Length: 98
Image (cartoon, rainbow, N blue to C red; front, side, top):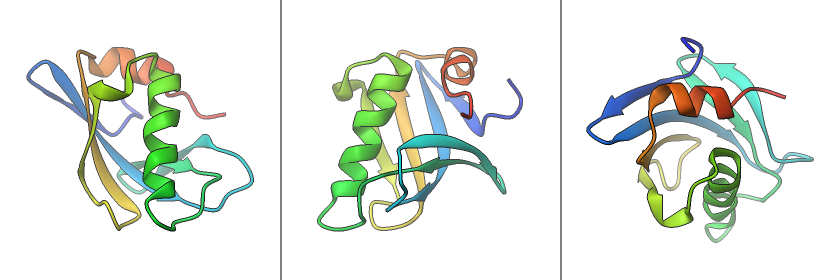
């Protein structure tokens, strides 16, 4: 569980992510410094990568998209994402690298 770059924030978990847009497939790739690296198949154009990220996290974490909020990094590869109603342990169990 310690590999996941996340912290508890009230009734939510805050994820530190490094995004690689334009990849062949969308998947968790492991660690990148002090962030969890996620490869996205979507290009970084017109917010498509951010939409792909929210869709991927919702499916992988088994939560509604409405429970996921992009807190910072909308136009950056470094992002912070808040997932409501989830613990760090739950997120770590579901975000295993491929």
